[in-house]
Length: 121
Picture (cartoon, one colour):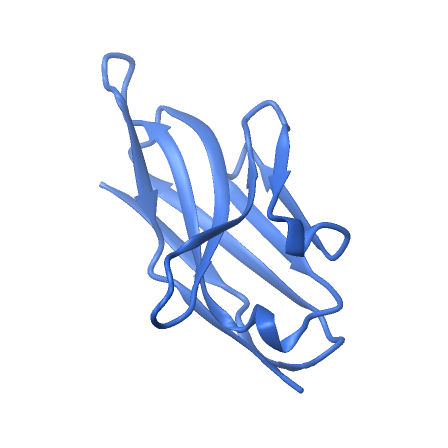
């Protein structure tokens, strides 16, 4: 079993900051990319930021310059520092991990349960 647990969401005023954390635990052999997605009601889940095991990073355009993704490979954790938050950043944020559970196991994608981020104007 693999579990991803997010923390750090909440309510913040526009212009404020939040730091999301995600801890992956369980039977993990190799961790590949980790990332953050977000979803608002009635819309598709969208990628916010992703980081590979080698440190390559990708951001959605709206997050560039405001959000920073990082990871701790030793702890199987990924973080999202969100600055200059805007009301349109309001969403449920999900942690995502692409990993394998054994030498002969294929890769699978796991999701956290989500954490609400609300930015008031």
